[in-house]
Length: 166
Image 1 (cartoon, helix red, strand yellow):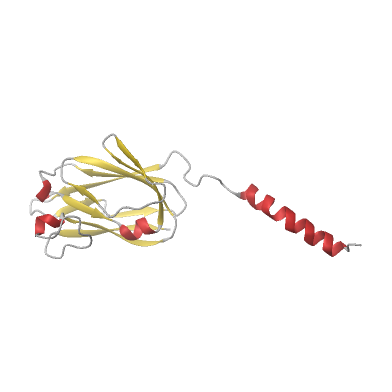
Image 2 (spheres, rainbow, N blue to C red; image 1 turned 90 degrees about the vertical axis):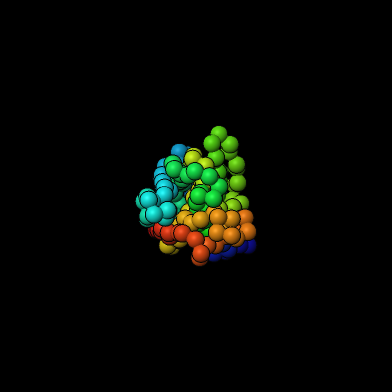
């Protein structure tokens, strides 16, 4: 015959998954995402300007980051935007360039290059708190480096903003 403690243990064993499931929020990326815009322009000295320089986010919240490049003239004067640490610590949902949507669903990408006037949007959910670099610099080919190379182009012009996730 089972004792009271054994019945309680069996009850807990079978009810725990049900209780945990009931606490689940399901889809973490609750629509609509909070919209945040950054603008990358060129100073009279040819340096990139990032506005705002710092972005504050909350982990577990869904965001749509608009990256606007209003004054790019061509491939060699464009800007490359990298935020690899943030992307490594986020769940990516969607990248939009013009009317083209790329559904990533957790995959990652390395950079966005603004080589003509326009905007791109990245929808994501930051998971891990921290302070992450937002690099804006020359397109690698503009400084004699291989196209698609990632990381700081030390011989080029660049700035580093911050994305702070709490």
